[in-house]
Image (tube, rainbow, N blue to C red; front, side, top):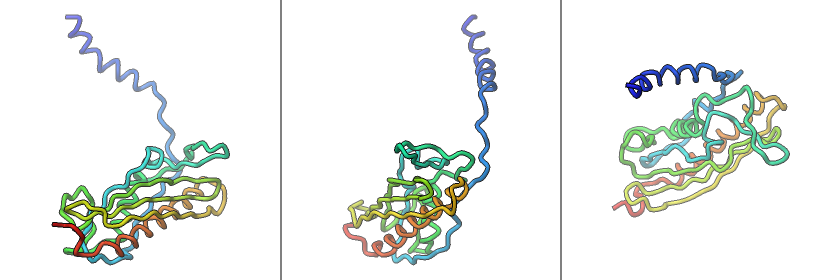
Length: 197
């Protein structure tokens, strides 16, 4: 009997606890990468994974490195989606394609000649300098053999020290990084892929 009453009261007590927690402040502005124009033509099909990243780089918050090397989240600005998802969508936009020679998201489940595995190793601000660094590996679709690898790094300078200007600079650095990865994919992903048997 006591157990039944305790179980019945548990949702009420949990609701009471949640209601006293302060709500996080809403951001003053949201920033995004896209939409981006198709700038590269594919000679093969490719699956684009969402890039791997640490929690600091993969979320909606923007991080800045202070003079001691500590990372702090910028107040009042956020991404419209997770940074890694925006990078994936931006690259899909840039590569586009139609029919057999297309870039598709991993979630589609479609077989492809190649697969892109990439990682965000830096996506931060340092003062008014925005930094982005990505490491990308192109794999053969069936065998998953490594076809080619690259590392790209870009920077952009904010027009002033405001968080809005710094967020725009980080957007520019991210778009430039994705553009370089797109050029790498378009150059390296060519049929027939090696070791696809």
